Length: 139
Ligand SMILES: [Zn+2]
Ligand SMILES: [Zn+2]
Image 1 (cartoon, rainbow, N blue to C red):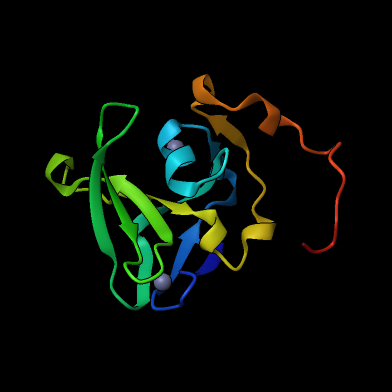
Image 2 (image 1 turned 90 degrees about the vertical axis):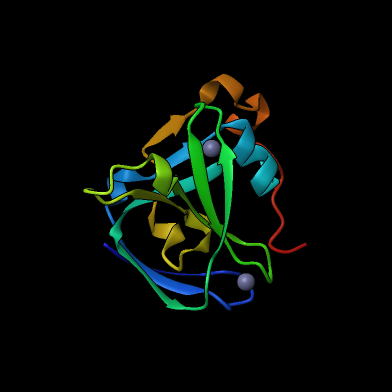
């Protein structure tokens, strides 16, 4: 499906084509630290199906919990994370990279229920069930 994304300040806007069955929740410790939340929702897109329509991404390279080096694309104005992917130097240039789009940046986020949880070795147990918490419409 076609998705439309933007960072918080809208300096960056993009479109992508994703397979809704590829959406995962990631419980890795890097996602916890970098998102500030207990886990992160990620939708996968082939690099060739990702189109930056506005702005320029800033790249940060890190070594993930997997031991692989990862390239993270984010907005250097508002700090919103856009994607993670393999680093070009480690990548077979004959194939598209897979971008793990940060699903919260997508206008269609509500239509993208996750299908799998990954890196559950570091999951935060209370985050597995928040349905019993009282709810307020606003702050
Ligand atoms: Zn921004
Ligand atoms: Zn993660």
